[in-house]
Amino acid sequence: MLRLIKEVKLRQAIIIVFLGSFAFRLVPEILAGPWPLGFDTITYYVPTILNWADGDFSPIHFSSYTPLCPLLLFSVYALSGSVFLALKIIGPLLYGFLCSSFFFFAAKGLGWNNKKGFLATLLFASYILTLRISWDLYRNTLGLALFFLFLSYLSKFDEHKRSGKIVVSTLAILIALSHEIVSAIMFFVVFSNFGLDIFKRKESSKFLKSYLWVMPSLLIFLFVIFGNAITFHSVPGGINYFTSKDRGIPYDSYFVLFGDVFGLFFMIFGLILPLIVVGFWRDRKLDSWLLICLLGSFWPIFFPWFQIAPWNRWMYMLAPLFLVYVVNGLDKLQLLKIKRANNVHFHRNALAMSLFLTVFVGLGIGYMILPMSTIPPQSTSIERLSFYIPGGMLSNTFPITYCEDLEKSLQYVNDHLNNDSVLIIHKSLTGWADLYLDEGKNIINYHFQSHTDGLQEAMSSGYKSVYLIWWISNGWYGQKNVPQEFERLSVGLYITVYFYDGA
Image 1 (cartoon, helix red, strand yellow):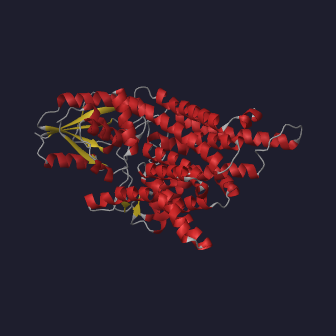
Image 2 (image 1 turned 180 degrees about the vertical axis):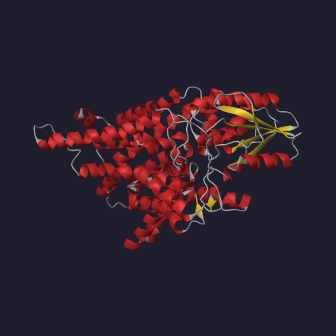
């Protein structure tokens, strides 16, 4: 088996990895039936696709978000005619691209052989955090896949001919059009290496000419980042953790924020942290990647009043880098050198690797296929961490098992809304409302505030009656109960419609 792996050519290996990863990621989509997966997919991508389909398309929007992934989604939607089908197709496709580009990076960027590259890709594809990223962070997934290719070509940038440098420049532009955090990592890697080259070799003119190839992508990146500031008079992504809410997560004190940051870090990296430490090695590109992501991840500990992009998104970007260290750690411990022999070392290494792979891959498969618990955790700390890493992939803004009730409730409200009534919706219902409610229906989005805030806004707007869709019990997003002013209507078993008559 190992001999066959060694003899596989790079192009064949990439195809194998792509098809295997695509099929792997397709499994939860099939298990979810007709319903999409992911929070951001239904909350942000669906409204964007539908707005574009209605003709609300303008390049000015690209100052608010990177457009490449939404354009891909919209293209698939235009071909398929179904928003849900587009989401189900693009997720596995992006995952296949992500894992195959990671394998390419292992082979070309790190110089690893097939055995080491396949192992790294297996761990990467089955890692809970990688699956969580693919769950709804499609822009991130696309940007990261392109970044692996970029790093692979950047390794011997000075040796490339003009065509090779054009490839690097094009990849940099695509990354800048894909995701802001990945773009920031890319530029930090490029310019920190540029600074070190000047410091060590003092040949500024030579290196300046080389790094001018990434200038077009830098201009695009600055347009996306600062175009938002010009339009909305605010720094895009600027977060004060004590005055804002991220998906309904308030940071009431520094200690709560501190607990979230370190709690998430040890939850996703704790088991592999010893191997990360053992496998660490000095590499300029990897060092730069590690430095900026550690700074972004732990920045709130030192200065919680302002950060560009949430700390947890920076922490997610440590996953591929740490898995590279894990595989290198396994190699340093000689667990990859398993040769057939009747000795203690062979049995020990084989047993250790089998146990490690069984636990690691088994956790990923379980995260992907097991039904998500519909009961919120009783522990406050676990409930908070579940906002960052959902308890399973078989969910979107609601558990998959509740989506049928949600559809019935939306159809009921759509049939009963009139000019004097309004539906108040939590942020988690944004995309659903766009899909199921007729154009022109009265809707008030109270985002991540309380139901009471939504009711008060409806009353102050002059509506006589108010509809609300929520859980019958054990509601999510920190809102377990519906205000007593609402009457529960018998629409669904788990998710239902509530009605307030203010006439």
